[in-house]
Length: 452
Image (cartoon, rainbow, N blue to C red; front, side, top):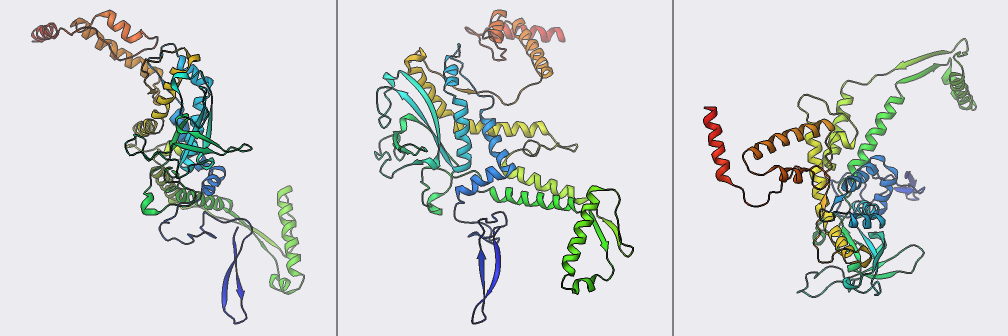
């Protein structure tokens, strides 16, 4: 930890110096440029801080992993890929695994790329020839820290749809010579938006990339850790042992008195830890002072947890693993809202990349797919129904189908094909031809008359 000491100068002026022992207390802002509580910093936090927090702070790691896991957990469906050829191709490329790593790096450091090893007879620094793709051999993830964009490597044609975006990336891989690759061979992920022009750019932080999602959250995560640490220390001091020693002050006045006292305390602690019998001098007295927490501590700490979860945008029961209590709580609603946020993130941060990869796979000769066919990406729902909910939903759907069939809106074969035609149950109904609304209205009028 950073230690501070006072140093006397020859002119008796007191100066403050810092003795670094290799550790800076980031959480308490000691030894940093932002020491003290000045509200906010205009500079971006260092990537090393985010890496250290991910490794050393369990809640930060859970937060980042949770976002990446939920964005990829239920994966995708490609309706037009009826035989799952594209999904199997992606599985062989470990697409889900590589994208999950890219999402984590993007959340942590503000960006990442996945380089696609495409066999098309051209060099990596040349645009992909989609008409000559024999195979996609591998997907390889690289964090923004390992990718450099030279200022001359951007599209500079104002009429180009990619104007202002990188045309080339230089990849630095450990133990290998840096490689320049064309952007058409990469799946690119960018981080959180920030007003770069107003804040100014830090060295080695290209304007193209975003910033870490922890930029505005790392302090509250650190403060939560401090609060938890303080609470744990209180728990450790519930019971305080007191040992009364006669003539203690006279003992301490003796040059060897402090050493004798320390030795006596060590013997005292050892005796407590190995035996239920405590041996005391006839003039010594032992007592235990018990402490208790006030009733508001748990409520205050719960509020801290709720604040952290609210700023992170994740329900407390998911982020903290707590149980929602109270008559007015609605855990399912909070979870659904969180899943809606994840779906939005999937569409913004993954959809374009997956659509492009799917297109390249369809052009690969070893995929044996129709190059002219359009393929769409659907993210599978994170909300999974229980068996009871599925039964209830199908019962209601069957009742609805029965009404439509009775009113000749559609026939039983259409219902059968819509519900079970693709091998999985679906509530979506596909109807061929035009609906006879006249017949439907006539039946409704007859039913109303019968009810009257």
